[in-house]
Length: 265
Image (tube, rainbow, N blue to C red):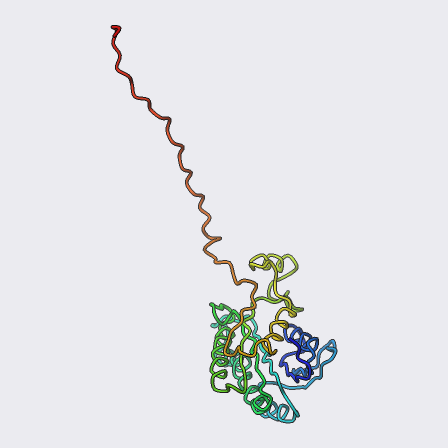
């Protein structure tokens, strides 16, 4: 699964999952450029940085067309605050859709010619929120559902030159985990809900991205790879707390009375 000589761009690659992906690609031998509005607080060894707002179509096109080569695009930039639908107007929810769905489309279109020439690939970073109810982040979940469908359509339209796949990611432990899951006890409690017993690490997502970008996945396109530790335990299993009624023991056998007579036979 070596990526020696490959050039990769990771959007939102300066922290969290994106940084984990960037580190894994570097370790696999790729030349990696990370994009974000601000540079990383801690420099990522072996990577270059492109200041970029992926929602700015003109800036995206200028940045990517200026590259001499591109073999891999990882559309990772995204996210959303917790916001119940009725606590914001439609315009705020639309911004979430722009970042998580329209921006990956914009970046992919800008990268297409490079990727076509290189017979490269795209990895979309999706979410389990796109395949289950996502209360509090409904616009985000809708965007991720759309992103997965977009990837499948791209995989057909851009074949055979460009492969396109999605990593459907579950809960990941990052520097921002406390905002979602609370303190260490909260993170531990959430971890116990995952069948594998822990949250993913950014490196887990990075390893999966390396696989999809490598020759080992040369015949994989239009696929959605679940990176969620086994998923979520069905809620009804914990809700079913009634104690089964004990089965009574069998009553003692009744021995039939034997007819007797006072007379000897």
